[in-house]
Image 1 (cartoon, one colour):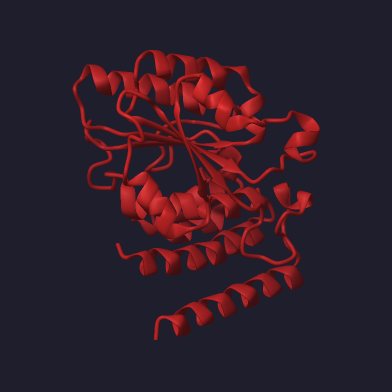
Image 2 (spheres, rainbow, N blue to C red):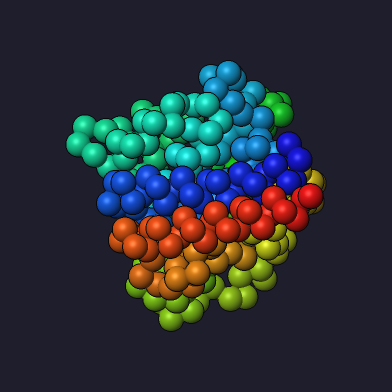
Length: 279
């Protein structure tokens, strides 16, 4: 898919995330908006996974460790045809399978996640199994930056480096905010790249909203043969909505009708400007 097509999708995806969160009156808005560009590139430009091959052993795997931002994943999976998009109108409604964290009952979702620190360990085991099978499978996960305080992640990082899992890529949604405060006020990560390198990973910083840079990086894996890859994606919580960007309360927040209409107006304007730039 062309970079321009993926860029257009990101704007459309943001509108859909807001639509379904607003309808549900629940959701992790800020984090869903910060990971959308990453998911967009993974599913539309990088991974070998589709509704048609989802039960094939040779499909690529994606496990969203940052499970609370599932609304973004739902929107992308619906767009890829894993389930009808209108199903998302039931998001967080009584008896709906579309709940606030990923579950395997939803087509396209590999694992139940939401307990932070679980995704990377599962991915490490999946990547090792693929190595033992001499499979071409690549395994991806997105981690929240607040999630990096979980010790299970660091155990998995030692494991992945020891077994030289260069078919594994972890992507950090580094938006610098977590549920209660800035990361540096709760549990500082820096120097995150030096720590990861010391654990035996190949590390790269990337703008998590630059579609072209994300595509180049994720299509060029592994960064180093024999090492798992860790992408530090610098993102903005609430990306694309002026009053949400870098505002802590939008970690878990639902826009009012007025706020929703303002957000859609901003995204419509962004889409119009984008289309004009291509003429």
